[in-house]
Length: 442
Ligand code: SAH
Ligand code: SF4
Ligand code: F3S
Image 1 (tube, rainbow, N blue to C red):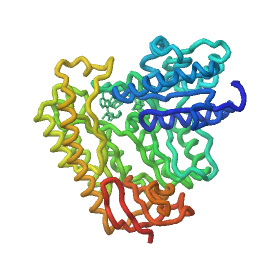
Image 2 (cartoon, protein in one colour; image 1 turned 180 degrees about the vertical axis):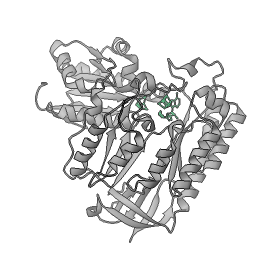
Image 3 (cartoon, helix red, strand yellow; image 1 turned 135 degrees about the vertical axis):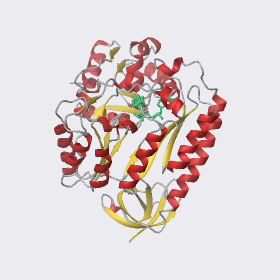
Image 4 (cartoon, rainbow, N blue to C red; image 1 turned 60 degrees about the vertical axis):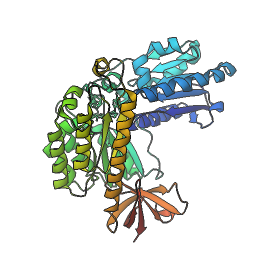
């Protein structure tokens, strides 16, 4: 056990899995009497949960760490720790590089956090824990269900990836794919729904290859079907899906299961077959578009979003035009777009034909302009339609407005009172904007 009544300051970088891992960390630290604080000067422990998917979030970690040196000089009892993907990738090197750092813990070591902190405090020596395990204990940590306070929650169903896309660091920092046993997932969601949670988002690097590493367990569509039966749960989402693993069974399940939200996040990365091949993505542009069509056939109202990259090594003007063309043809509801960023240890970092930064920036700008128009148009086509919204809270923009999402994952703001939070309401869409919709409750 660690000492009593202390404060932890935690800053999170990266994806939803990291956000959820941070919730897990706070929950196990709470069991050891550490309370979260927003005031860094008050903290007994400072933790950074880090991301290394691109250079930018990684650099940010080093600049935050640099600024922490002064705090450590003022308070020698302060424990500074780095977890997550940068920690996993860099390991001991981080301790060598940052003299005032006390603890480095990797993506399979969250569950050891209280013990590691105690060790540092007792020995006054830095510690590094970045081992990968066959059985990932942190998959089964879940924050205690709140009594009616939380409307929605993340649930980890798997971690890691076996795909080794040539640009991606994730398989190195999250390890091989590990699926969590179905009964543990169902148990957690049951407990959450008893505590008032109405919507869950199932998390994994590749949710639709869930279960392929377990023998005799549930497949992903079977898991969705079982969650669909849980009493008190109204909605489920899942992210991220890989185009090559979208099976017909899954497409049917999304169409048929009434609690599965009609939204899919399906990164395509590039619209050029040459680039897709060099990325080692395992599908062609034609196959990707076919999956999109099949999803819309089964479920015409489905929202489709994706990730895409520009300036991957060897991407010429023609390849880029093919990416724009795919965007035009698929008509995504929204896109997350990035400049390719070489990652140490990945295959693509060695490719000789890297693209210069100004070309990347130009392509990104062109792509984002195109998508902005498409998003606006797609949002405007919803005007006049009736949509069911799960009310999540008070809108950030205006106080007397509430906010929630459609099944297709679009944010809707509408006039209403906070007692609607946690309820499903019907709204008429009055106006579609670039980033949200305006609705009227009926
Ligand atoms: N498992 C998901 C992606 C996880 S990483 C999938 O397979 O689609 C999230 C997104 O970050 C990716 O979809 C990709 O668009 C982007 N990304 C990953 N590595 C990158 C890199 N080296 N440079 C730029 N963007 C990258
Ligand atoms: Fe990275 Fe590819 Fe795995 Fe996604 S599928 S996490 S992009 S290696
Ligand atoms: Fe980043 Fe790790 Fe997530 S690299 S995107 S925090 S899996």
